[in-house]
Image 1: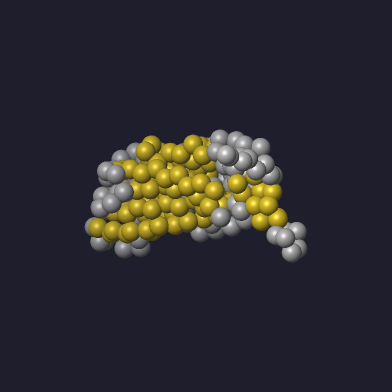
Image 2: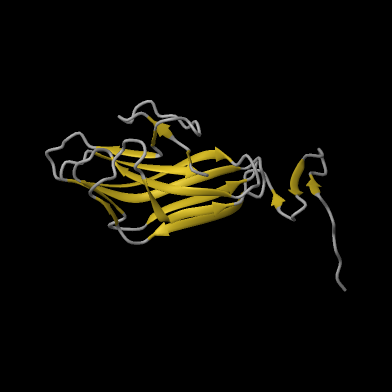
Length: 191
């Protein structure tokens, strides 16, 4: 014999606080818990050595690191994480990595990497990650990095997230993912 229990929320019996809610799609929501996690990765290196540098319009997409993400709850937080290694050679002084949501930069800053803000849609360079080296005389700089930032989901509509990449100047080269994968991940956290 089987039974069906139909509820839209579960409350604490002593104080009436709602601990778990279920939406009409059947998604369970518990504050602070992971609702879903998606990761995209590029497993081969990516080199930029000509034409693409940070004049604001010449970032290129790391196409394997594109995620179409549909939040389950509009009031969720999205933990966006980028991980990679970077290498700069032959006079290139820096590398920009940006994350765009529906083609709008999530984190922007000025051309020299200062005045960073996480105001979505503001003008400036894609600066989710910016690595700068001050010594142009040294030919090789290698960095391994991971960065996470928290954003509001704002809706339950599908959203496209893209990882963008650029050199700081029109000299030398930049490489991503030469010693491991380049990843973009999104974790939805219930509020």
